[in-house]
Image (tube, rainbow, N blue to C red):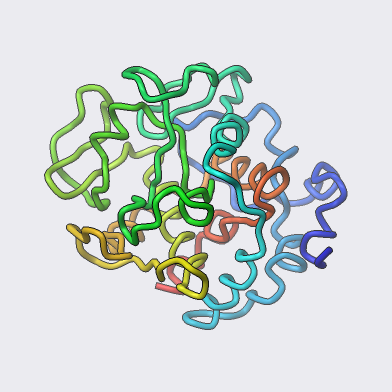
Length: 272
């Protein structure tokens, strides 16, 4: 067992007695009744998990983070269903999940492909790099989220940008012919998921080198935009309790890796 992972073999409740990571401020996101139970501490993470990244910037930081977060357990696409029921559990109702774009709390068991149900949304659209649902980026739950079936279809493979017409079925979300704008409460979440993917998948395995760029209409290229907007969203919507808890659940229970931009939002600007 690596030094990073062995540290977390003891309950996080003990470690969480000290200062927690960068408290979030997104008011409309679900609140965890006991956030300290799930939130690892900044000093603990920096002294263990991120020890090889601390103090670096730019390409050096990106490379160090890639090495760190590539140490993960991979899930099958069928396993994603159950994983999302844990990662996106509604803290106010353990029988439900919270849907990314609508914010709706819905039964964990009401999942599938029918109208009104929830399904698995690839925030980094799987056609951008043509990775499909094979084990790897296609099943990485750091960017897979439960979403309303119809809203998932409307978003499709569009890049992210500001503007468009508001969705009647999901107020606060906007779309046009080539882009999608999520509701304000999860704009930063979306940005940090996209940037996680760009660091985790660098083309040194059987998958494409995923990179953000500052355009839309990226088609099947392994690119996702719009970087300038994603950076703005990350800054304006910092990690909240729900997002930080999700990061911890993925680390503790499933993939055993973290999204570094949730733990250190300032690393977005340090790399891009």
